[in-house]
Amino acid sequence: MIVEHNVPLQPYNSFGIVARAQHLVRIASEADVLALLADAAWSGAPKFVLGGGSNIVLTGDVKPLVLKVEIKGLRLVEETPRAWIVEAGAGENWHETVEWTVDNGFPGLENLALIPGTVGGSPVQNIGAYGVELQDRFESLDAIALDTGRTFSLDAAQCAFGYRDSVFKHVASGANSFGLAGRALITRVRFRLPKPWKAVTGYLDLERKMAETGNFTPNAREVFDWICAIRRAKLPDWRQLGNAGSFFKNPTVTPEQCADIIARDPKIVHYPMADGSIKLAAGWLIDACGWKGKSVGNAGVYEKQALVLVNRGGRTHPVTGGEVMTLAKAIQTSVYERFGILLEPEPVVV
Image 1 (cartoon, rainbow, N blue to C red):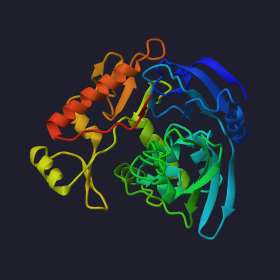
Image 2: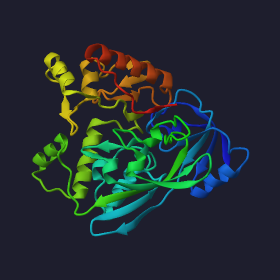
Image 3: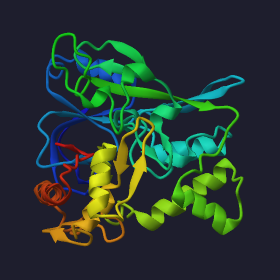
């Protein structure tokens, strides 16, 4: 185990923001975590777990010890008449993991293709896209407590999944609180991919693909390819244009609130939810306030999708975390003043 010092973090965050880690250690196995916690020089130090860096905004240098998760491994754990159970190391690239499952005959994750980040970050955020959320395909995960070194496993109920939410995003509020933000490092994640497989195609963009191709019974690889094409057409590749994906959560309102907004803005994009609430498209709200294509310094709103904030300065004159957050707060103010809705950011601000 080697602790590196004064490490540039620009290559490790998808926004391409310049920042440094005062100290960083690469975690390639569970043993690395235990060795770190057994080292008196580092066991009591504040720690920050870093996966793919695709869901963070760095507003300065990171003072806590950065644990860069690089645990690898992909395998079929079990096959039953009802499901395939697949396990992936937390440091595996998420999109490559999805492609591996499809190519090896274990379908079920294809709607989540091309989401940036690592496997370990997927349950933290309860990632979701095109009609599927991680919780729909989750079996269990393994993690290590960063205070005691104790290893433990969690099932879906214990992860307390919500919309882009989990127990890993909440700080413990007391001795008996189960909030795990900053308290645990995920090492491996297992997915339950149901049999018989059934394509999830109830999303408008996928329905258009079926109509365009005349293929109304796509296989998993075809759905995977469609999702990749849809995302590439709508969203910037963070390698060419730094970003953190969707910057704001889609807000939910009551039917009465939605009716009030529709009376003023009949074209608002909205979706009824199973619990009776109405989900509004945050990108539409931002666009309606005139932000698409606008910038604050080197932070900009993507021209093709108002939900995405981008790094207009590139790698040579990169956006700062302060510029990103100034733009985000200005957007929040505009949307609140027009619609009475406070948008909630998705990325973690560090």
